[in-house]
Length: 182
Picture 1 (cartoon, rainbow, N blue to C red):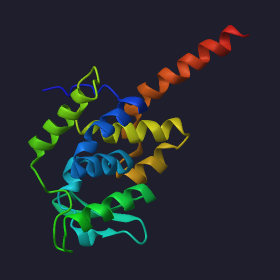
Picture 2 (picture 1 turned 135 degrees about the vertical axis):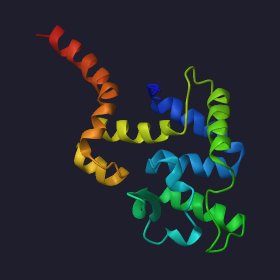
Picture 3 (picture 1 turned 45 degrees about the vertical axis):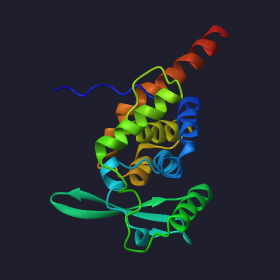
Picture 4 (picture 1 turned 180 degrees about the vertical axis):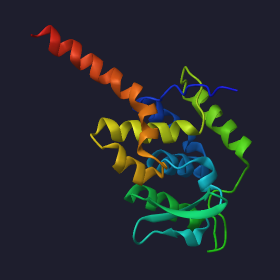
């Protein structure tokens, strides 16, 4: 079955989706983490509180690669550190508690769609949109494939060429303006 192409979220759509989730501390925290770390859904599922280093702004995620769990570091900014620390404290989580394993995969996808609808985003949105958003935003900021690949855990930098179409639209608009002025 062919993969359906992801319709990327704009910054405004992503921000409105996250704002729509601010009625629930867990989803608000989780969606912010997903937006800024760009990990695959399965990588969050095994994160325990002990895997989060709030002092150094790092979170260890695990991904299955060739039948072995491989650890990857995700960078946390000050906002994420604050949200995660607050969530851990409010819920009295212990080091061995899971950080994101509140619900199953299907429920997570349903919540993304629920909040996307609440935010009035006109296209289908899935959890993968968070990853897509981060990669696209970094490409727009001038990051190269190799840098983004290291940050997001893409196995091969060439995989990121799938995200070029979003950035190409921005370049096309600028090209039209610049060519018009020639």
